[in-house]
Image (tube, rainbow, N blue to C red; front, top):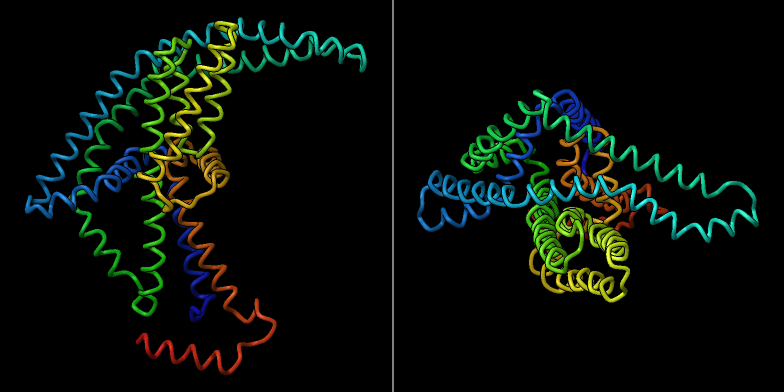
Length: 371
């Protein structure tokens, strides 16, 4: 049991409020810093392994960062043109898809209209066109902002320049930072806090180094497979499905549904639809039997709904910075909640009666042995 729980509750509550206020106030400038810290956290274990080979830390950091950013740049250069081209083509073809959907739904809407009354066809058509109009308007606004907004251009340039610098300094100073944090831990609760930090690190690293890597490989597999199969917008759908696979099952499910619909409209052939569906089924088998066990294991322990809620809440409150921080914060909150539940079950509030003298004596003996 933690001594003086009220004091701990006040302290950590105030700390959490101050952190939230800090992110809220400076969210417009935090993106390169959050990205830089995430990259440093991702690559730090590799740096430590290189340092063990008697290579200076500065050299190891520089080599690893250069390789990482060259790889990232090459991926962006190769992926951006087809993604943009297919996104524009999809936006232009949305009205055609709406007409095809209406043609498929019309017989069923006529039956409903005859039995229940009302103009279902016009209502559904209006709803689809309005939502498609909003989608096109948002897409056009984003594209226009990227193309002509100087503020967006300056922000992107700042992120591109600052992110490598932040990552470099964080990776170089990582041992000093961890030692500084370790020195701040209250000595009385050092063992408990270090245990919690270890659990948090396991969950966050499992996601950052595991789930994101899985999502990357799935994106590549889906994009290449759908493109080779000849599916319209296959590269865009594949990359999107891989990105959304950060939330387990969500990316593959949405990718499967969208791909099957596009395949049917494109060919009208069940064989082609089956081929496209088979790509996602094989992708799920590869993920479940190879990628996730090897890269993630059981270390993440975050329910897909919890991840989805965290991403939506983070994005809604703090934009892109909130989405970057969402899953690590969700993992930390999960660990703290589990610890709080254990503490609650070990308290007199949960038990019907105080612990027996024998149990108290056993606890005291165990503490003396531990000391």
